Amino acid sequence: MIASTLVSSSHRLLNGRRFPTLFIDEAAQALEAACWIAIRKADRVVLAGDHCQLPPTIKCIEAIRGGLDHTLMEKVVDRKPDAVSLLKMQYRMHEEIMRFSSEWFYHGELEAAPEIRHRGILDFDDPMSWIDTSELDYHEEFVGESFGRINKQEANLLLEKLEAYILHIGKQRILDERIDFGLISPYKAQVQYLRGKIKGNSFFRPFRSLITVNTVDGFQGQERDVIFISLVRANESGQIGFLNDLRRMNVAITRARMKLVILGEATTLAKHPFYRKLLEFINR
Image (tube, rainbow, N blue to C red; front, side, top):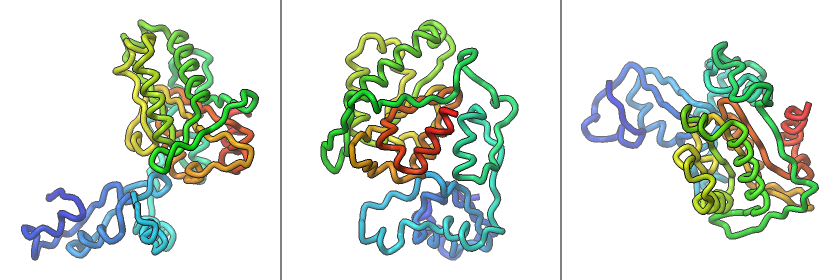
C-alpha cells in the first residue's frame, strides 16, 4: 500500500508501477487533471468525498470558465448515478440539525445514529435557532476583495448570545466537560473582527481554548458541540454574493453536534429559496 498526494503519484519512484485499486479521498475537492495523474496507474478507482460540500479552490477565473471547477466526482455523479453509493448513517449531529441538509442536498436519505439522534446540552433546548436581525437596522460594509464584508453589529450580537448561552450552560460545566464552540462566517473580515473581540473580552478568557473562530473553509472536516454562524449580509437589494455558494453553507450548518445558532437578516437572505426554506424549517 502506498499513500501520496495526487501530484506526488507522478514521482519517479512509481514509474512503471501499477495498482489494482486506487482510492482518492476528498475527491470532491480534487481537480480532475490531478486525479488523472494517479488514475493512469490503476485498474480500479474509488472516489470518496461529498460533491455537495466544498469544491476545489480555484483562483483563476479563466480556469473556472473553462470548467476546471467541475470535478471528476461531479461528472461521475451526473453521468453514472448507478455507480454512486451514499453513506447514509451519520454519527455527528442531532437529528434536527441533520434533517434540513438531508432534505435539501441528499434527497432525505441521511439518518442519525441512535446514540446521537437526540443528544443535547440542555434539557428542552431547541437544537437549531435563527436570530433574525431584520428589525435591528444592521448594515454590512465592504472592506475589500480579500476580506469581503463585515457586519460589526451582528458580530457583537453574536458574542452577546454566546456569552448568554455559556452562562445558561454554566461556566464550570463547560470547563469540566470541555464543551466546545465554533464561530463561523463566510467572510474573513467578520472572522477577524470576532477573533479580536473575543481576545479583548475578559469574560471569554477561561474559554478561549474551547472557542474556534474561522471561515467556512477553515471548518471543513471539523465539528463542535455548539456552532454560531454569522451570515453578515444585510442590504436593501437582497444581494448575498458569496452566500450563493450553497455547498459552503452545507458545510457550515453541518458542523454542529448539538446546537446550531444562525444570525442573519431574514429580509435580505430569504429572497434566496435556500435561506427561505432554512428559515421556515427552523421556525416551523
